[in-house]
Image 1 (cartoon, rainbow, N blue to C red):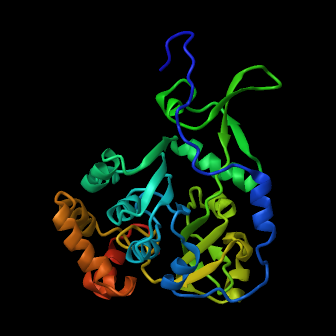
Image 2 (image 1 turned 90 degrees about the vertical axis):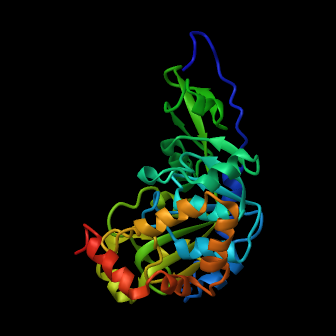
Image 3 (image 1 turned 180 degrees about the horizontal axis):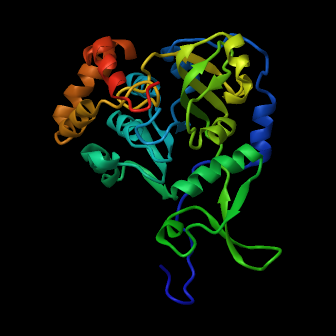
Length: 329
């Protein structure tokens, strides 16, 4: 915390422009036609995730992440990506293993919650391979919200007077009504994001069961959005419960059906996380040669996510994890 009278000049780099007018110009030219957006994960990554792009990953920690797209980014050897580290745990671990990112807005990375720290992610950050700017989970989530609202920033009080503010790219401001000190949190418009959902139709109308964390705002902030889904359903089924459709079709650029697509993460109401496989990741990361052999087997040596899943037990293992999911209906 600050000593009395001390002021902070933030040292963080702003990796993505909060220019609302530029973002509006981009969104204005996106098609809103009701067209079939189904494609493979390989095609979606090839078309929308470009070297040097700023990438956002939905879900939270090891819950409802799009492992299939993350693997494919590594498999296609995408490089120089920026990343929004909004509680990115296994997703961060995967992208760092592939040396895909060189800059990161960090709220929570490296740690896999109670499972421990990722040895490789820690090595990668300490090597200087990644430029870092710090945020709290709240302020990074509010950056999506500002973008979703079409505002260049949102005012807040959070993290004022802390080292998070010191290493952020936020700015102090004075409230025009009260004269009080506030924080201006810049909007974040990722070039491309991915969100894994429970169901979607062929056009991209998507529904999430349970808490969507920051995905409602993230979907509206991303210039391009890939949706992976446990299952593709009819538009009639989506329209039967319209209030559950948190991501409407006009936000979506690609729809990829990937059953068990969050594995080894948890998919609420569907299957529990594979703690044995996550522990395997942490163990092999202790040795760089061991990690490379692991990646060669599970990512570079597989054609797609389904082939990877078969190596980890396929339907038999997923049936076991389904039985372990405490929220399973």
